[in-house]
Length: 300
Image (cartoon, rainbow, N blue to C red; front, side, top):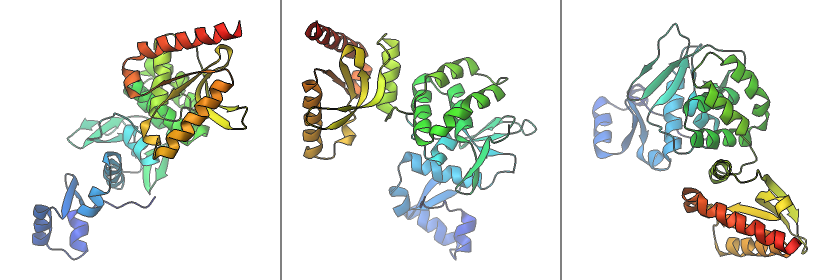
């Protein structure tokens, strides 16, 4: 992945800058602070979002680690390229053996741990916990919504990690948070296509909705192949989470409308919701119940 490397005073001086020129660049804003003692040129800094800036920070910290240490937790997720959502990124997370104590500073959270075979890999040249180990660590330590959203995204990125998670969980049996982690890990599904779909599945369970099939492809009468987010085949209901960012222009909206018309032509009821629906999911649940009732009435 082509992305800027963080700059330190040492690297800036090695490039030919003096201490005075570094101070002037910082005062003028030509250099921007990523973290204490770590900088980017302003044009690079402004081109990155919060997660990408965290990657720069984590990559720098990773380059300073001992061989038995690794970037971990949410920082590992960011370096792997896993979508992260609503998680603090102020500190880079590192895991190390118990022989070196854990600590928390303004920019670093060091955890103590034991390593099992295959739990450390390398990304962008720095040691990082494997995707399976990262998912287990986050399932132990994050709130359920965030843990499921990141875990689904990890399995979406690397489906093969699902087969490794149970082994990593077993190796983690002496660590805290394993009860909640087990519940989260059993729930994960890489077929969830976005954070919104992951959160929707959680809300469905909380409100007692039947478990849907995910990302099912349906063939309509007009020959369209429509992949739906949620499908209750026995009930004749389709569910769609509307992430408005996926609509980049009027043609996207038109195509979505045509797809929905094609689904209704199959005799299916379509229930839609967006981020506001996730905040008031009882409204969505009632709409789902009415849609299922209409489908039953038609079928009888």
